[in-house]
Length: 311
View (tube, rainbow, N blue to C red):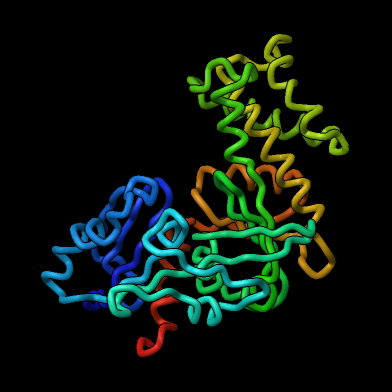
């Protein structure tokens, strides 16, 4: 490793992760802290406290932060960059704080192919990281999926983010798991039974792709009562149904002869693996990208492209 050069930060709604990085993006050290929802106007103090040891040893290092730190509940509201856009346009729209020492990455906005406004904040940095980690994304047209509470589906072409849309898959799953009759025991106790139930959820959803998800969801209850899977595996079955519905409808909307049959999945490995299973049944290949690695690579890419930081 070379000497620390900058601080990279992923400041989401619930969690903050800070990294002390060298110029190549290798992390020397890490600090964790409260998310934007808990910061309540204390962003500067939290950042200074968590990085005090680093700045004491290495001086006032520059920093690049992404995520909800740039939202209406964040440190400062950073702009949305309209799509289509490319990496340098995103970097140029960073919002400066602390006399320019700290830069906040902007979010992205678009008019989706469903003729509706859409936004992302934080995922754009993961996309920048994926573009750096996977050279093939910089040529041709590709489908990207970033699973999560609000899953993002995006199309990139020759390294430019063309457009995207959002699916509330994760949030809907949590609401139905915790506040509906569909799942009475949200904690799985048998990994093998959970895996089988998830796969069954995907398969059952795929059996009638023309059926609306609202016409299918009660099967999570009725198939328990009929003994097709145990009650403790109901959450996994529900997850399979929702993810299969998300995947099938998104691919139908995004697929064309120019996008090919590969989906880049960017996120937490356990979740991207579930999406990979659904993509495979839809006869798509996948490339899984660890979300943590992608965001760090994206923050490093932003740092390198900022004025005065080019090697």
